[in-house]
Image (cartoon, each protein chain N blue to C red):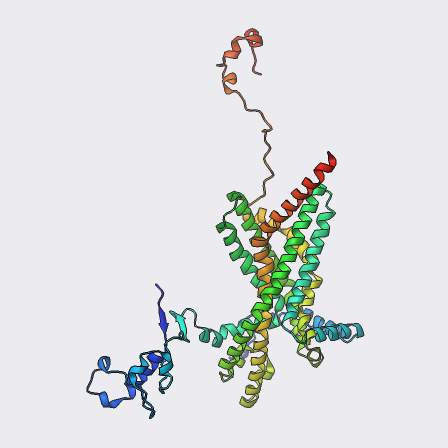
Length: 249
Length: 226
């Protein structure tokens, strides 16, 4: 179960007061009253109970209406910790140095995880086979796009980064930063054609899924009357079969 | 009798083997060749007059909102790809004319809505990302500068830097990391819109709209035929 660990200012100040106020040492911690320091203007403590506005005249500034500034959900999402982490810096480096591969990596996460989950979970009129095919199609397109982008664009992105770090590259300013996406624009159409062309064989040979054509209303072969073959049908006694003498048709 | 010293390694020739060295792309000769060729090609290309004119045009128009440049480029790429698919659909002789037009209309609607969404999300995210980037700089400006040596083991400038130089390099790196926030935001929003929102959310809506438009067109044509 999740719980909120809220570090409110009032709680911190109470703890600080408990640590430093040595006059109450004969009283247990849990039973010591929290007495904020009053200013010389002499605002009474009972006025504090009327609302947050009275509290502002005290040095302690007990803020009751504002939500807590620091929240972490069991330590799972601590924004300060995330912003200081080495992992985030490595991701930012990756985005800066290899724009196109970063784009392909993010697309891989979307097409391999998020999109198949949404295809399966959203209510749809399609049957399960079609949904399975659509999910596999999405995964295949993500994998092929990632493989092509990484193989082709990784060294090219490194080269462009190398150029933009030189004096000539820095002189281009914003245009230099946009240079990293130019290979993707130039190869957008060929890459799309290649991806679309490679999806059916990947689906067939890697995932073992093949899109079946539409089923016809009438079957190609008419259903056999097995009673006729077993010579048990009543029609054998009438018509041409009555004079049949031998052989199997 | 031939006596060989123990340290004369004539029987076990040492090979060029490194233990514990991690593979890095820059260790690969083909990778380095392509990267160097690309850098040289960019240097030659960007020294031409027409390229400098284009760069000047881009700088003038992205001065006020530099974060939108990446979104413009993503939209340009998708425009080329979508345009190609629409033209291919319209010229596809395997489909009848009605089906071709319906599919082309569907693709156009998906492209149009995706482009609008990409710009809308990017604009919305810009201010929030700027706040996050400022918070990142505030939290990390007094951080440990020696992480640069850990992150960039192959950069000679960083490895040989003394503590004072390392502090300067760290402050420059913080600015680069701050700039990467906007870049990552544009790439992620573009990817989310074109690869997730468009196929999952926009396509069914575009299908319904194009089918309705075709039905209305047929209903409008029928009295004329009678």
